[in-house]
Image (tube, chains in turn cyan, green):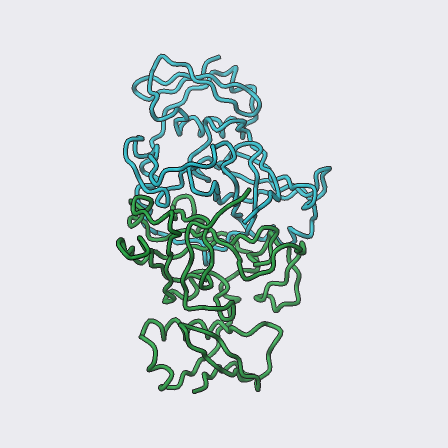
Amino acid sequence: MDIHPVARFHSPFLSKFGIPKQSGLVEELEGTVVFEPRYRNADALRGIEAFDYLWLIWEFSANPHGATSPVVRPPVLGGNVRMGVFATRSPFRPNALGLSSVRLSHVEWATARGPVIHVLGADLMDGTPIYDIKPYVAYADCHAGARSGFADTTLVRRLQVEIPPAVAASFSARQLAALRKTLELDPRPHYQQSPTRVYGMPFEGRDIHFRVSADGLLTVLE
Amino acid sequence: MDIHPVARFHSPFLSKFGIPKQSGLVEELEGTVVFEPRYRNADALRGIEAFDYLWLIWEFSANPHGATSPVVRPPVLGGNVRMGVFATRSPFRPNALGLSSVRLSHVEWATARGPVIHVLGADLMDGTPIYDIKPYVAYADCHAGARSGFADTTLVRRLQVEIPPAVAASFSARQLAALRKTLELDPRPHYQQSPTRVYGMPFEGRDIHFRVSADGLLTVLE
């Protein structure tokens, strides 16, 4: 089946580096859904503000398509354990489809680019093509207490984060909170753990540089 | 983006008629996910049994593709109110992508068709192409108490259902419960409410015929 983007996502993340591994982990992350010209029609969103959450079906557009393996190595398991691709949310899939529930913040109904949806907590890179938007229906979609295998929130280790005042002052309060919580999730590739290495992460059009000590203190550099 | 089926769904429903309007409404409905030959590999499912629910991303394959409207008329609103397509789960979408959470019952690991996943509560027609399977991760996917607009469970009206013993005896207990709950959801098209009309619904390879009285009693005919 040939599918075509109905919208594109706009995000503080200009590269894959640093993007939280699931939606909702960093609620302060604000992003926007900007429709493609042929879908810039307020009618298509009529009634959407009565929902708290939306599903986005999108494309892992920064991953190479084509050859895939039946197994992947989830970072949350340390990168050495192989799990089946259909038992994970790994980006390396037979079809490069991503799925995220995001919080609907508000809709800007009349912009030069048509109606724009503002959402919170997205784990999408800037420019990601979106193929469908569906409302989150709690009675069908919410399974409280569902066993979630290895993907348990208690397995998300958080770092301590220090941001120098001069860097902090250049962001709004929400941007700063989003940056801090993103860094707490440890954006380093799981196979790189050198305490002397300086990492760079594009965020909100800026380059953030940081180091992580052996005991888990992440320090943003001036 | 060109996507290709990784599996097909097998369901008691051989046509669209009667299929519940969301996943999970009829928990007794059993269906199976049968992989396409190139994905018949137990490795691709390694670890999946540690999850209670799965997401299926699938195709509304029984709907005409192509021309769509920005608005649709949800049956739950009586069929006369127009809502934006992105504010509904309507099958008439810019891309014919469906999304359902289903309960994972068990995996048959070694069959002539490779590993087969047995699931409960699916709202998929027999033969539906499946493009991706992802585990349900409660901490990211479950938003208890999320406002769900018009799609509230209290809006699902249920009928009273009478099934004659001779018909009931030809089904297993689970099949009978699935049939009863499916009929309670009122499978009639919303624009047809004639109490004299006899409706036919294929289910588990049988043809079920029924009438619905003006006061909401559905009677299955012998």
